[in-house]
Every structure is written in C-alpha cells, then in structure tokens.
Image (cartoon, rainbow, N blue to C red; front, side, top):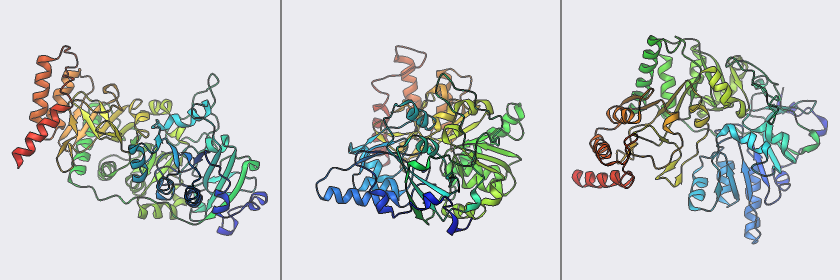
Amino acid sequence: MSNSSRILNPALRSKIMSAEDAAALIPAGANVGMSGFTGAGYPKAVPLALARRIEAAHAKGEPFRVGVWTGASTAPELDGALAKVNGLEMRLPYQSDPTCRSKINSGAMEYIDIHLSHVAQFVWFGYLGHLDVAIVEVAGIREDGSLIPANSIGNNKTWLDLADKIIIEVNDWVNPALEGMHDVYYGTRLPPFRKPIPILAPGDRIGEQYFRCDPEKIVAVVRTDAPDRNTPFTPPDANSKRIAGHILEFFEHEVKKGRLPHGLLPLQSGVGNVANAVMSGLEDGPYDNLTSYTEVLQDGMLQLIRNGKMSLASATAVSLSPDAAASFNSGAEELKKHVVLRPQEISNHPEVIRRLGVIAMNGMIEADIYGNVNSTHIAGTSIMNGIGGSGDFARNAYLSIFMTPSTAKNGAISCIVPMVSHVDHTEHDVQVVVTEQGLADLRGLSPKQRAKVMIDNCAHPDYKPALAEYYRLALEKSPGRHTPHLLGEAFGFMSEWKAKHALERA
C-alpha cells in the first residue's frame, strides 16, 4: 500500500480534513477515548489542535475541559499538551507525563488508576460514563471501511465500538507491511454470556487482522506523517545488571529443580531499564525458543527475536527506543512472523495469563519486609505513573517477580521498608523480590519467615540494621505475632533512622 492509497474507502476519503477542523468537532465536557499505549500508536495531530482550541477558549474565559481515556501512557503531544493548557478534567487508566503527574498531585486534575485489563470491560459495563468521541491512529483504511491498526491496539476496539463520533488519524509513517500483525478479538461478551478465551499458546490467533468500524460514525479523517515518540533506554547500569544476574541464576535453579522447562515459560516484562537488562541477559543465556505473552514489546525482546532466541512475542503495543522503533517499522514484514498485537483486554486477560503459566517481571517503588509492594505512589499520596498491567500479571502468573534497586535518591531512601506507604500488590500476589543485593524467594514462607529473607537478601547494608531492629522490636511488642508490626512506628521509624544516619555521615 503506497502513501497515496492509504485511504481506499471513497466515502471516508471525502471526510479528510485538517486537525483543527477535526478538533472543532469535540465538545467541551466530552469523554474522549484516544489510541495509544506506552508511546506507540497515539494520535499525533488532533490532540495538539484540541489543546490549542482549549487554550483559546480559556483565554476568552470560557470553560473547556475533556476526559481522556487511553490504553496506557501516550506522549507529550497528547497528555502533555492537554495538561499544559489545563484541558484534562479526568484521565485514566495510566499516565507517565510529568505535566499530568504534577496536575494530578496538585489536585488540579482527576485521575483513576485502573488495572489495564479492566478498562474495556468497565466501559462496556457503563461504570465510567458515556464515551462521546474516539480519536484513533491507524495505518490505513481498506475499501470496505475496516481499519488497519498501527503500532498499538490497546483499547481501540472498544473505543471504536462504543463512541458516538470517531476521528481517524491515518499515519503515513507507519509501515504498511504492519498489516497482518494484529489479532483483534471480537468474541468477548458481557456476563452472563461470556465464553473461554481460546488461546492455548502465545502465538494463537483467534480474531481478525482489522478493526471493524461503522463508517457512519466516522466524522473526520486526518492525515499525519510522524513517528511514535519513544524514550531512549539508557544502557544497563551496574545495579540493573546485578538484578538481571540474580533473576537469570534463579531461572537456572528453577530449571534444575524441574519447576521450569528448559525453554522457560512465556515471559512478561514491565517497561524500563531493569527489564531490558533481564532481556539482554537472556540473550547470552542457555535458553532457546523463548516466547513472550506480555503488554509491550521492548528493545530487549526485539533483539531476542532478531537473534533467533525468541520465536514469538504477543503484546498489545511496542515500547521501543527511537532507534529500535525505526528498526521495528522498517522490518515489519519479517517481524510479523514472530509478533502478534492484541487488544489489551486479551493481552492482559487473567484467564489466559494463568493458563499459559506466564513468568511476570515488574518494577516497583518499594516493598516491605513481608512482601507487600507499592508500585504507584511516593510517600503514600503522590502518584508516579500508575499500576498499569502489573496487577493483571502478578496475581495470575506462574511466577510473580518484582524488582528494584535497594535504594533510591543516591542511597537516601531504602526501597525495602517496614511497611509500604501504599499497597498495590499484597504479599499474597508477590512470590519473588529482587534487588541488586540479592533475591528473596518468598514462596511457601510465613510472614515472619518472609521478613527474615527480605532483610537478609534484598535490603541495602546501610539499612539492614534499622530493618532488623524494627523487626526485633515488632516481634517483642506487637500485639499479634503472625505479621508483627508496630503501627505507630512503621513509617516514622525509618525516617528517624535516616535522619540519624545523615547526621552520622555529616
């Protein structure tokens, strides 16, 4: 398909207009479902035009804000632009934009942090209100009006099904060879009519290559030619390499014990440098014919595919550095033999995750000595990004692994604490915790046994004495001895110790 023939449906070709004209069709107060997942496949032009329109309205003293629903995080041209002009009333389900984050934490914007597998069904259930407008990026429009997805699917199927009005952005930058990589499943139903999701292996295709869409609902088509905005990954640092090393050693141990097959089980990996370090380690490891059932295809997984170490990766989107994104785009024809992109309600579906026996590896902000994990909040009240899909995978995985450096802020903060300030993943969903200090295998351990392993294996040496002392006092003074805690001291204890430690250092 050439750039000049990306829009093959005559009726929809007649609806081509500027981004400004398309943005003018979005009313104030609308709930807008936008494509995009971890910086891939988001609309590039209409959100910017909408931000300019909102800014002009505010300059006249006219109120104008919208609710924005996406698949996950997007990019500065969407989240950042709308947040900057105070144009976001409500944001869900996940964001990573600094301007958005500032608005949310200052109370200027509402934000709902939702498990990614829940979003589409919550919209279908009517829990989140009415979806007025959808803005969806695609690679092309076929003669019958069906849409060729771009580099992410996310919640686009649901947006196209339920929105009253649809604006399509056709991005000429996306390689048309991407056609055929996608698997859009239309078999989901509302209770009580649900049926099993028929995926028995990561590469199973159960749906269609294209989005269905009622052409009558499409009110505008906008042409763009812009790359996805992806963030470069820094090379793995010493701590990331040590964390990866502990995980790879653990895999080797599990294979020897017969708890993992030699080719491992399907891998899921959260976004970030530590996750990419694990993938880099697998490149040199003894495992072949690896597979992935995950949310996002990252640089490390892409490299495993190119080197023949990974045969199949299933995801809902790509999350690549700029160089890797260009490589993915140019190599789409070959890569679609090894990559399947699905709606996130399928990529993150608990039923499928549990059936396939996924190995889930996700980052965190902090963990406590009993294995509870905080992956979203700083000091209990300020959101960082969101829970994303980590909960979808953690609770249902064959192995649930959380990883982080043992300290933050150049050692000023311990990431292993007496009690997490916010709980996203309870101790019941956390099987393994890894820092550069070591790995805590929490399977089959009581809370008190977990505490000892966490302090011994994962805490930084600077903080081990304080954690051990807290645990000793809790064992002595806690009214209950199953999960010993001193609730009055759980948060203040570490702060007091850190202040004392800073004075000693000075």
